[in-house]
Length: 96
Image (cartoon, rainbow, N blue to C red; front, top):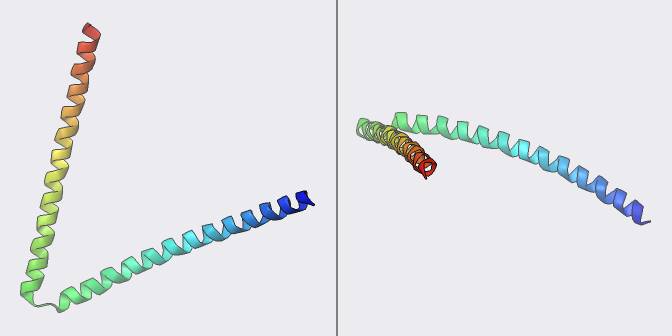
């Protein structure tokens, strides 16, 4: 009798796993569709705004892109400094 319950539990667990995978797939698909719809709606709204607001949005986008590039460069610089420091530490450790 207990083996029957184990078999039932295993079967049920497998089925629930398949349902979970299907839901994950469906959720991901719905998420992508929603994202595309939002972007399309945003473009429609943006096109209907007065030119002042469109310019303001473009300026904000430009500032974000500029800051993003600046931070990428800063991050690269820090990574290079870190690598150089690691090499110095290894060299000093080898000398001891």
